[in-house]
Image 1 (cartoon, rainbow, N blue to C red):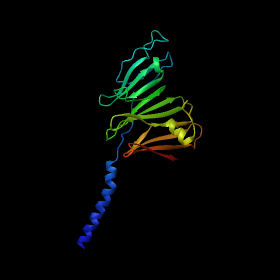
Image 2: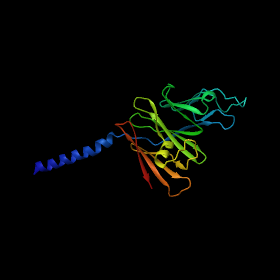
Image 3: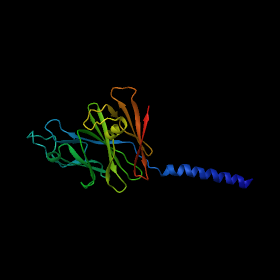
Image 4: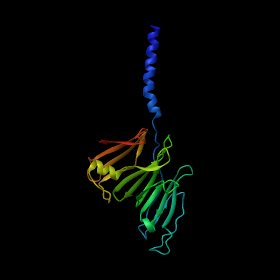
Length: 224
């Protein structure tokens, strides 16, 4: 009788360990925090930014000789002294394209910017995500760059690719009817809600769940 009782207790304990331990080992993301803004000046051209830690660029005077608002070539830093995101820009050579990532310019991801809000998401495993929102008129797109465990920067998520894959629309030149909201995080999953600019019943969310084995995100679409 006593042996049967302890056998049951042991069985329950083993079941609980199987359920709880994997969850305890799963990555946990923090909620996104806005850390800065960057864009291209519509008046006279050049790179502009706000809430940066530093920016060593020269003033862009190609079109406006006394310009003291936008910059031509340099490095802007965002974040804090512990986690710094570097943005390398050279309007003279690359126009609106910037390189975003680590202290070494070779450890970056390149893409064009117009009007971008920069967020930071931390994790309990050392991986840091930087969701960057392109918000221009009705358009709202996201590129999520971040570090891998080895410190290398990669582009994890691009909502323009998601729109092409799931909705069959090529919106790389802008003008997308699909609008993506600010991400939220739940455990090891980044969630981005979406809606159609003209169709009220066209709403849902994408869940990007971290796959520790693949060291990448899986994708699940949920239609409301």
